[in-house]
Image (cartoon, rainbow, N blue to C red; front, side, top):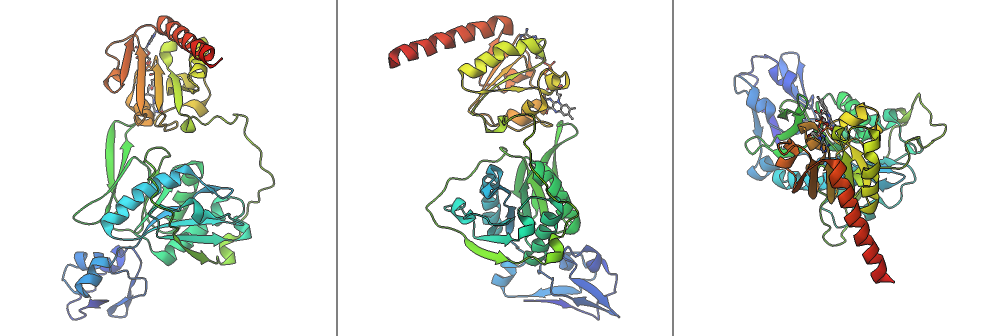
Length: 402
Ligand SMILES: Cc1cc2nc3c(=O)[nH]c(=O)nc-3n(C[C@H](O)[C@H](O)[C@H](O)COP(=O)(O)OP(=O)(O)OC[C@H]3O[C@@H](n4cnc5c(N)ncnc54)[C@H](O)[C@@H]3O)c2cc1C
């Protein structure tokens, strides 16, 4: 395969150099020269105003050209892959199938356990393992430079990462180092059939519109996705991906920061994104005391307390329990929303819950439009009745067990 420039036709307008997402073209005196970074993506062919550029290739080669892999960033904590990685692998596999390209995962760290075992039975073709003592503890600088270096070597078409605390800090740096764009907090990813470009959908303008963003002129196309937005894939068999080990140039791992010690925050171990059952309260509860019966209901259902932003802003409940666009995205089996109106920003964080039960005194509250079960009533009447019925049911279960 070769990129051919018709130098007689070329007017040296230099648009191809400006637009090449891989920086593979350069002007050498009165000619355009093609460098090794060219992936034959065909963008220069499309934009050349005098049709002076062409790709010489067999049909089969042409189909595969410019189709770098879909690369998922394998965020891990002490070697255990974050669940968002599996969710991204599920979506990444769909994208890779549409693009007919490999799905790959990159994992960086030091003294990593058998990461491939965690990826067995998934549609991952290759795991790129980067190990270096400087990567033993997570730090934005060394991890960012390492990932950008690997992206430069692998030239993937798409890079996906979790919009976790680390992902949000890491990926903008990587995007800058790779001189490409980044769409944060995507809720949908699809391939545009005509172009093969990645359609990156995310809420915009406070969640009131869904914007679809396309990175036409830069590669790779980079997106982050919040945990629990995508569904993890089912494992098929036990086949493991191929492993490719990479050495990192030591200048990439130098850092001005040093981790002296790690200390857990005051907020305790609660992670509502992991809970199977959530009982969430809103402004309709009237004050922090309204959360006492809610906590009892959550305990009876074996769940955790959650909240709308209105009550977090009011200081009734800590931020770690906020659900929604600026809080956590959750996907429990059961989500009970009490005194929550169902604003679009709240809905964005809980609409994928398996079963939604809403308790609200206003029959026209928006939450009833997407709840599976709705109870119209005052929480001061509904909650005690529910709690009483659940206590009785638990007591009956206990008696049966004896
Ligand atoms: C950029 C941006 C980001 C945002 N991010 C988030 C976010 O992450 N999460 C989030 O939740 N919000 C978010 N919001 C705020 C969001 O728009 C709403 O203001 C918020 O969700 C409202 O919270 P609420 O439903 O608790 O309160 P309200 O909207 O005031 O609703 C209270 C509900 O309680 C009901 N009620 C009143 N009394 C009773 C009673 N006695 N018994 C039963 N029901 C009763 C009422 O009928 C009403 O429906 C965001 C807003 C913006 C602009």
